[in-house]
Image 1 (tube, rainbow, N blue to C red):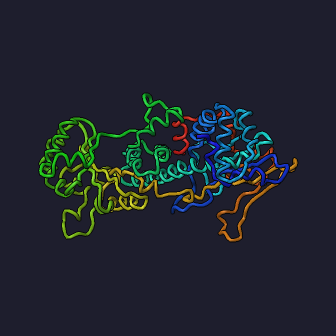
Image 2: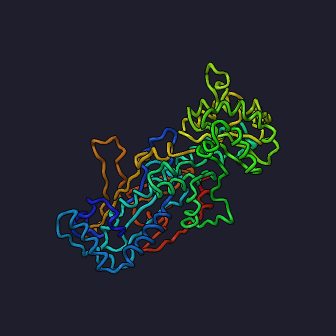
Image 3: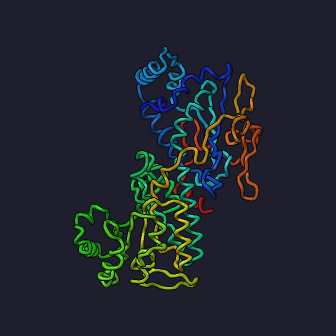
Length: 481
């Protein structure tokens, strides 16, 4: 599809609506509000993907490299019938004649944690006749960028929580945290691009992921090589169809067959197809010697019920249920007491829970395990679409707004500040400079062009060319800081 069709319909008339003599439109992309408790900084991520995939690949393939008459008349066909007018496409024809996007993007480095109300990047046109293009790109840009930023931010919060509890209960095993949050979200996302972008955001903080195309995407857009570095990884794992095919009457036989099929490495078996508690208290004791003699770890995966209660136990008339998965595994397989005094399961056995995990439930699981004397690292959490799909652009209030224009060679500092709003939608004003005070990124607006040039925002794209081409490793390192 011609990428110029990837826009909101109301953008089509804006070229004529700007004041006559407009030659510059300068806009910014900013998270304006956090609707997630405990998050005040938003991870910037996904712009390099957007630039490579859309501003370069798709604009070249589906617009600039197409015959002018064909691509412009196709555009006119849809717009004419959409608006019911004879639409003037001379500006579209002029853009095709130019052969590239006359846009400059200045951005912070990806992986930077950006305070609320501080811009992540700015856009401005580089040729006066294409002033209309800056905000024309808003719709496409917004639809692509908000999700990787949002998922990367939420994943970072999971990482922060899991690291905090691991430090308190199993600090000798902190490196395990990179595997403790596992992306299970692909099937529940709004589409494959959504799943990939969200999955890439998750993978900035964690190595565990079942969203396989993330590996290819990082090679394509962020210069990785899966043969030389760890991008994402996972393990052999079953699904309910496998367990059902083995029959309810011989579930223990299915377990035994799987243990024989995978004599080494980590093996995750979904264990609540019928009766989780029977698996834990009847089947595993029978299979204990086979599990202990195996060169690897068997991971038990419950997949239904309240995650906190299933993992940690709860008040219940059945004493087995009241103990929960981790305590029952400890009762059968034991483990060690670490230097901090917390129980760590035998390395031959473990657990993962991958249904309806949220930040709050993850926190509760870790806290209740700690209260029971267990290290938080005894469980892996499968973080799925119940976390990553339950968000919108408004989760962090993302918006692209113009704050500076030039009309008849006169600069104008512009802004919005609706009287009916609570202040969320109030924009900055004029050109912007970002700088650090005590390590915190800070915004100063209404600056001169010289001041703007001296700020932290650096050119990453200009006139159809990518200037900064980051590597996943660099982005992950920034996010650790």
